[in-house]
Length: 159
Image (cartoon, rainbow, N blue to C red):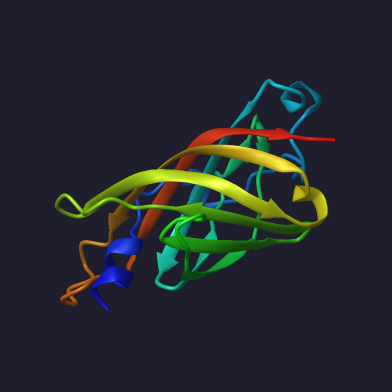
C-alpha cells in the first residue's frame, strides 16, 4: 500500500552508539528539570521495517538512555492522532506516538510527532517534535519499507 510506504523510513549514517551499548543507567521518566512547564530534550533512534521496528542505542532523554531494547508496532492512525499510531514497548512501560510524515523527498521524509499516551514509567508524559526518516538505499522494492528514523523533541512529565 502506497500510504504505508509514505509512513516510515530511517535516518542518518551508522552511529557507534548504535553498534555498542551505552553504560549509563536507563531512565523511565524525565528528570526533575523536565517537570512543570519546562521540557527536556528527547532523541529516539529507530530501525524500521514497516510496520515494526526497534529502538536503537543512542536514544536518549536528557543525557540518559531511553527505552534500551525497545520495540514498536504501527497502526493506521486517526485524524486526532496522526496518520501513524506507533506503540513503543519498553521494559518500563509503553509510549504511544502519533505522527504525520510528509511526502518523501528522495529517500528522506519528515513530519511532526507528539505523545498520545503512556503507561508505566511513561504515564503522564507530554511532548512533541519532528521526525526525520531515511529509507535504506539497499531496499530496492518499489515502495521501500526499511530504514532509520530520528525523533527529536521535548518531553515533560505531568505529576
